Length: 140
Ligand SMILES: CC(C)(COP(=O)(O)OP(=O)(O)OC[C@H]1O[C@@H](n2cnc3c(N)ncnc32)[C@H](O)[C@@H]1OP(=O)(O)O)[C@@H](O)C(=O)NCCC(=O)NCCS
Image (cartoon, rainbow, N blue to C red; front, side, top):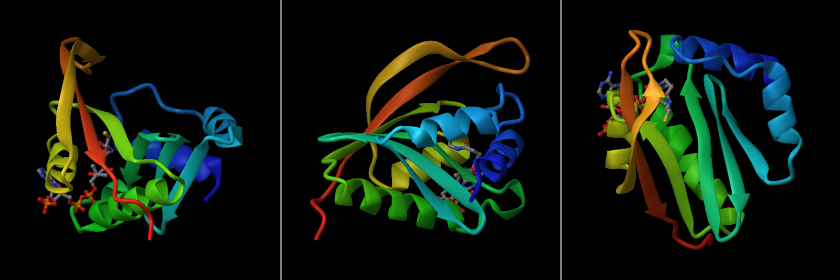
């Protein structure tokens, strides 16, 4: 998947956020610590600096959300992080993002912190970021 395709998926999935440009995504992918996990209708980006990995983003095409694709992509992402010698994956999620919170909760992520008023909302209000973490089993 090209950085342009990733940028288009990202912009559609986060209509209220400043979009990540294809140039910014390409620059991220140029870093040896950044890894892309791609699927037919979405992608995830992780930054791995063992023993930790961070989920930078995970996006499913808006037309394909709610069909289990996010779960499958997250499972693949967890496996990739473990294969890259990470022993945990952490992330930040907007506490108003119900689908993402459901996804991470059922995948076994636990809250480790909270950043108050971290995200700007389209209506001018602000929402908290939850910091979540999941321990990874060593890769087989
Ligand atoms: C978050 C996202 C990746 C989830 O992918 P998805 O394919 O839509 O999700 P799935 O169909 O695999 O469902 C995953 C879980 O979320 C739940 N879910 C899906 N849509 C939901 C909704 N609208 N409201 C509440 N829960 C929802 C499902 O019931 C499922 O829960 P379960 O694992 O307990 O059964 C996708 O919705 C997305 O791209 N959102 C926009 C970008 C984003 O917010 N990324 C995460 C940033 S931290």
